[in-house]
Image (tube, rainbow, N blue to C red; front, side, top):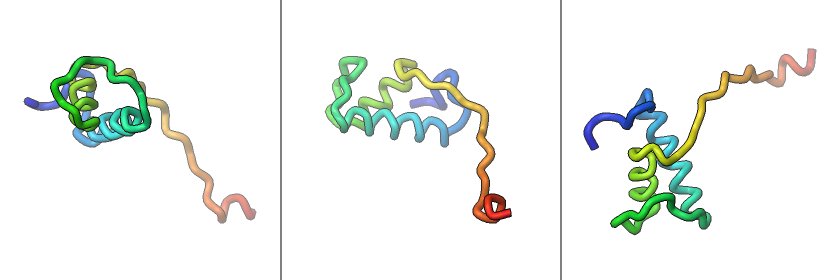
Length: 71
């Protein structure tokens, strides 16, 4: 793989997407593409590279701490 797939802004996001998709495949989801690979991680990498995994960024949510809830 040369660089990052189109639409993915960081290596961290790429790893997150691949790991989430690989977990789905391990849990029994059907692959979205025919792959020569048998391992779920490699299949997930192929799917992400081919832009077959849909994802979107959501705005960050503000977390409350235990100190804020006790006030």
